[in-house]
Image 1: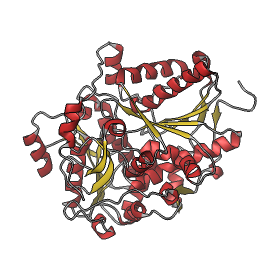
Image 2: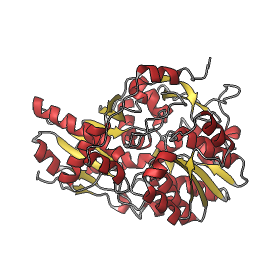
Image 3: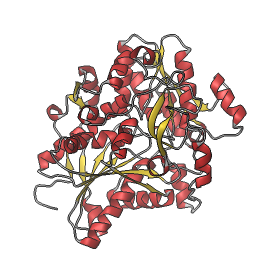
Length: 456
């Protein structure tokens, strides 16, 4: 072990960030605004308040304030599981025989098992503060639904979750954790909403998508008094709350006297990636430092690497605002054999703008290679990683091996978003040799792109 570099670096409670960081304040090119799907004009705060909590709407639209105070009630909740550790992966470095120094920020030390709790408690808090009865949401692999269920139980709010049908069937234990915390969980698309019925008529037998589940959750929220909709990724407000990951990471590195060269995060809708890179990206935007940022997405749902940068519906039912993002089309439904999470058809508008401005890179990886990295990491570092996190592990290993070839002593940071103990069906398929890779064809993507709305 290197002198003065411990395996794990923790901040003290009094060193934990007291403010979230809003990267949009430092962006020269701001993310494009959400558009009203009927008028194609920017959504107003009043219009958004029919769907989201008022305070969250203010955060969603704030492009100017770099730092926003974290309410004391949220800080008190954070202290149950934060600060989270910055871990030096000495064992992995040794096995890879690389001169690279590998660190990961581990977000799995809470009951929900992932980073999603960082925003769940914030959104539930603002809903409670507004006097609401409850919230609705969607979830894919289940981390977000689990986190929100936990936050709502803590604050005494009702929680209605629409879970992508294929995940509902493949991950029953994640579903049962949500129910244990008091949430109702409905497989999506369902017959309980008008938009769900419509999707089932048009796509009989569909295994669902996050876009479908979002449509159902929004319908219930807007048709039920005292409820609002909350979202676990994509939105500006979510990246804001998740910035606590990057802020803690940056503070821990400063404590060690170390600076990362490469920062890697898995990318589905953008919550973890945006939260991890935001404070470092702020330095890059202000010209204070330079970093190489790499977004890693599944080859079966490659919105960054094969998507179009365009306005699109955030949901399959086309009831939500239009967002300008890298997208595969709101009608895109990932293959049922895709087991690695990160299933959303689009990407955060903030991250999409940064990517379009060439401030970050993106790569896509096949799921068998992802699970190979997950297995290797579990055997060497002793943590069973979530499939989503394992996308970042895959590329971190690849970058470390490149350093082995070149002899460069790069310092690599990646986000370990959570644990994979509720993802054992996917691990079983991999261990049994039954997991296959599916990459959508250009023809399939073209068909999905054809449904993009025409926006002047």
